[in-house]
Image (cartoon, rainbow, N blue to C red; front, side):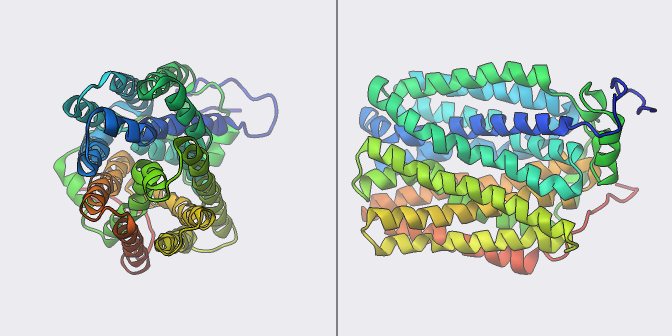
Length: 439
């Protein structure tokens, strides 16, 4: 069997495609779990940090938002870095840097230092999700792309679901600094595995020609994964000429707003508004995370199932997202009950819906010009993570001025409704946009 030029692949011993893409998906899954563990560990430590560093809710909101400032504004440079240096180096360097910033937070003794380290964490994590999107576009055909996106996105929630109680235990036994030491070291160890195991499709020794053909025939960008692309400002402007991009940018802002409530204020909400002990909050908080994990897998499965059954790509991608955002709006019902069980049920339904809507990343792969998947992913994630700036600050201001989370919950539900509007009325036709020859 003939092989693609430059592909160091041994001749397959059978006529079946290899499944190397699933190892790559596993790497993305674990990397994403660590990524979210490192950006959200502060929510577990927050009540103790607030007391030790003498912070009020508004100051704590600024600490929560510090990550979002640099993370959002570094998305476009992060996408450029990815397109310039390729997935292996971009993700590996990002992982090492963000793990170091995580570890150093354990030494923070004042507001300014902790704020600065959170800014550094956001800066260093910026290339991660654009890399995820580009790797999936390279390694997976279109009919498996929502599933793959769902699996690596599930890493956001599975780490939180099963490790949040562990982090609360560390907090209870060893203090809040140890949380940052432990999670930072986990990332540094995983960076070794990334460099050891990740290769672009045409460089992988685990992929055979049949799998390469399967990926390519399904619209995967296997041959382009490691290309280094020269970019200019006209490319960035190109991404803002089409309603599809504006729709998914607004929609992803809304999706991420619900997410950032859960990643920042949710444990404090349980302790402050619902009067739970820290250890109980640790275990109870894991339930909505598990629901979100199920939601993102269900959303990806449902979307790909519709593609395989003949539904249009647009319908297959948008229906789960719109349904999920509609469920996320139900978070406002938590304002109308004092029952702990009902609150957790409502939060679980809302976070399940947010998980379903998280397959929005597939639209970047489906819409972006082939040459600009990394840059388009950077802009997409920039739009999403503006909510990482705005949502924690607004919630902090609302809580600080009203001594209640009720207004904050209304805010989260209203932004989710904005996402429903964006995906329903703005995105329009889902099709790949091509660069003109003069661009």
